[in-house]
Image (cartoon, rainbow, N blue to C red; front, side):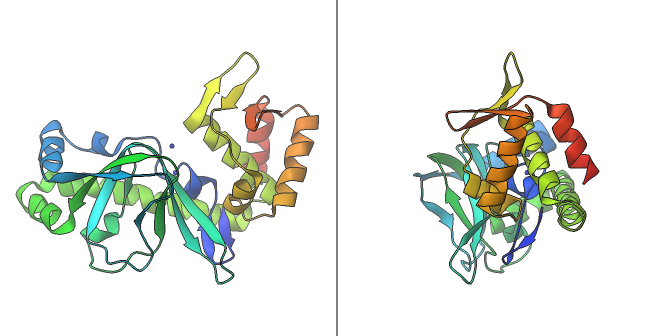
Length: 242
């Protein structure tokens, strides 16, 4: 489920927040034999809601993929404000920088619900690549998708208005967590206006004002904390018009 702009010391937004590299499961990039080989060197990791997978500044020694649950990648600003960079869901991989360097973590990753992950030690994975070069080729595909997503985020940051970024965020969420209704697409998870504001580099008041305008215009409906996308054509026009 991926994802904008530079604000308050962090990169955030629709592409980075929710649809960073698309809905493809991590293992869809690998052959069945490669998947088996990777799983053989993995160990299970369980997290409770609110528990950190790792903290910014920790040594990067393992990478992970998510088999159940969801996590936030965040940094803390100089003012002590948490900024959400990405939202990770089942099938996403996190911490892959550990495969290439012993540098420290650049962000903190926190479970936003109970999670089950698998972890692979970077040294074990490097040994695996030496035996199975096809794993390295699939990993390069992942990294190229990351680069493409980052390029899109930077373009959005400079060229899209806040209204366009918010529309793009909602449309991305519709593709990832939306379910069809008789009148539109209902986002199946609640999303606070404060979080949406962080993801599109805006204030909560600006997001609230825009959502109110779109509600009056019939573009969206709001039901018990959930948002239903009713006129996706109008949102799409806004997202692409900038």
